[in-house]
Amino acid sequence: MTSPLRRGHLFLRIFVPDMSEEIINKVAQSGLLTLDLEDYFPREEIVVFDLKPLLFREMILKEKEFRAALQATDWTTYAGKTLAVTCSVDAIIPSWAYMLVAVQAQPYARHIILGDRHAALQQSFLANLQAIDVTAFADKRVIVKGCGDLSVGAFAYLEITRLLQPVVKSIMYGEACSNVPVYKKK
Image 1 (tube, one colour):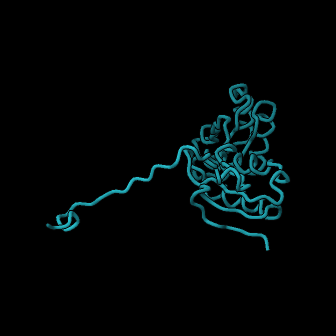
Image 2 (cartoon, helix red, strand yellow; image 1 turned 120 degrees about the horizontal axis):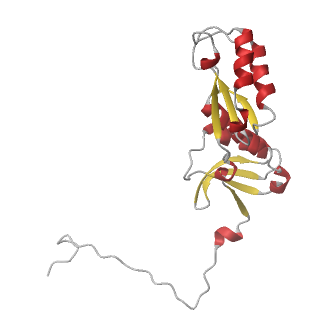
Image 3 (spheres, helix red, strand yellow; image 1 turned 60 degrees about the vertical axis):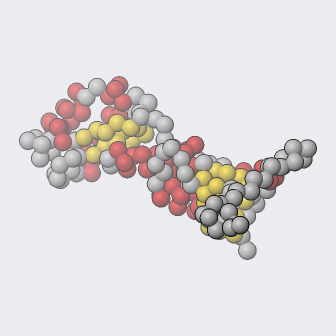
């Protein structure tokens, strides 16, 4: 008689735990703290304010017309939002023009950032991370969650490592069951 393995069959051994034993969550007992960067992802709306339509022939900034255009802008539409100030054409914009935009937008916009939507998102994200009370992580083993629903850029992982390193015992990346050691205090 031939063995079932020789005929191409595989056998699967199933382990059934003894249900009388208590299940212990070793991850919860490990003292690891999980930090999810998605919790600090900017939630406020980002609106782009492009200087291009305020320029003469969308190329040249004329001070008098620029000031008038800023005065005519309905700034209330930016209330409570992050304003990303940019110019989508290759024009020479004097520094004082951005200052004029800030003066007009300041009473309404929550934040004013120079750059496009991506730059505004990044700066807002960094501000949220820098507001973390890192003393809550003092002498702890921290796992920075690696996967999620939102696209967290490398800049955020770099910043959280910079912020945590002086106070934590260790930093890991990933999940408790599968992580990459990043830093360990000596």
